[in-house]
Image (cartoon, rainbow, N blue to C red):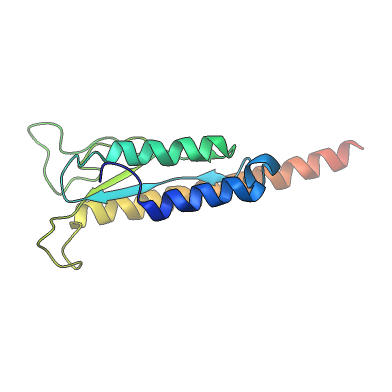
Amino acid sequence: MGSISSGLKRFFEEVFFQGRWTEQVWKDKLAGGFTDSGSRSGDKVNTIFDIVTFAGQMGMLWVPVGDPPGNNWSGGSEGDINRLGSSVGLLTQSNGDQAQSLAPPDADRRTAERYGERMAQMARHFAWEKRHETEHLSAAH
């Protein structure tokens, strides 16, 4: 409620205390995050920033949403991509009295799909860059 779950917090602490932080094993790896709550705000930003902080401590590269905020003008609608207007990480909202087939709503699911596509695109980009950097360095010697 208003923060990361105890399970995620336990995972963060286990990773830290297993030495992955001091070894920097996730340094320069891509990271992203999402959260859902029953309320439009639901203090989801606190959850995202807990995840961003962990990623930063691990030396990871955070990938933001990449879609402009939706539903923030008189011509907007509940069906807009990124209807909750997050830029840092994916925020979705699910009515607590609805089945999983209805909650979160379609707009949030589409936003999540776009965020997943963005993460995949960034992973391909960084893999390409790393491959070509290695080729360039090999050719220089």
